[in-house]
Amino acid sequence: VVNVEAMCRQICQDARALSGEARHEFQLDIAERHFLRGDQDQLRSAFSNLVFNAVKYTPAGGKIFVSWYTNREGAHLSVKDTGIGIDPIHIPRLTERFYRADPSRHKETGGTGLGLAIVKHVLLNHDGKLEILSRIGDGSEFICHFPRERLAEPETLPASATEAGNKV
Ligand code: ATP
Ligand code: MG
Image 1 (cartoon, rainbow, N blue to C red):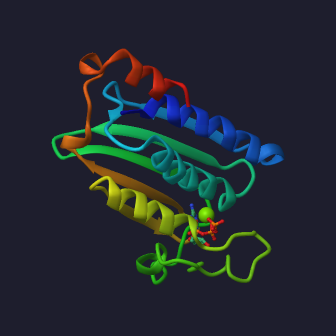
Image 2: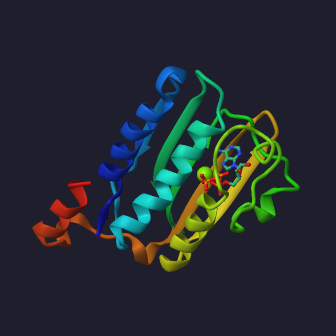
């Protein structure tokens, strides 16, 4: 079981270091029920790919919102930015390996185009789905949707599981 709150806090801390001089503003909004049944390393890799992308594709001073919320359908992790956005023609192919949208292909921003392929793979392993909402110049939002059955109740967990989740 993964403590999503602790994990996202750590990822935002790392992302702030990555942002450096660009000084992106981070906002974290995590619902009370934030324990998810899943693989700690895989989920960390998926969520950090989304947050690091937000830093990479958002100009200096931009904002990055990381939020976790639950509803009737399940649990949802949203990573939203005020960055360059993505042309809708690219969106269906973004999770393919090595696919990079214009202008990333031609730009000096490093990358191999594997990040979102990893995200898709991890979500597949967790019965989840990735939703991508974006418009050129208007920023992007990447939402990981998980089914209700993946939510865990912290009080029913053995103490060791909670600790492991917090240790991130
Ligand atoms: P890598 O993650 O392997 O270092 P990458 O970031 O280019 O390289 P992905 O993370 O798979 O690869 O992203 C694929 C493409 O999707 C990127 O090249 C970029 O064009 C686009 N993209 C991803 N996230 C964003 C975002 N937050 N804003 C705008 N474009 C994005
Ligand atoms: Mg990436």
